[in-house]
Image (cartoon, rainbow, N blue to C red; front, side, top):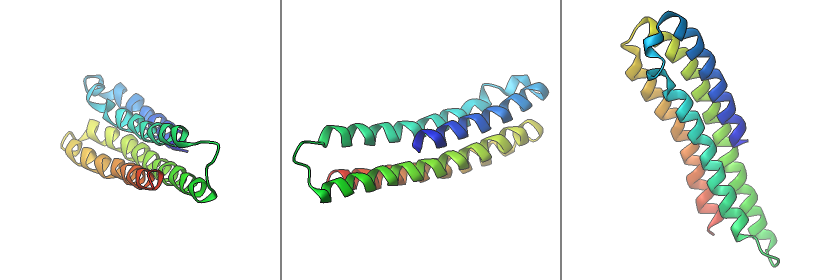
Length: 131
């Protein structure tokens, strides 16, 4: 789920960058930020997956299994939501920045708040997986 959110955020932001680059090609590198932030979301899922995979043994309890399921769902669903938010903000933000450069700082702040949604899921997943 985490990777699905990251892929959506990357694709949606990429369409905005492609549309914006026709009008203002000099802003392409500045507009890559939403794509980078969407890619970071997938790393959160990878971290939790590695932690869970390394802690699985033959004598795992049902309680621990449900904790791992909760950790995976926590990071996955929050990453999906964060990826969707980053994609929508990235698409509209880079198009708006091409027309009004003062929108750039606002776009970055909104992207940070969207990214934090995934980070919260990572924190909950880390707490659950280390119990």
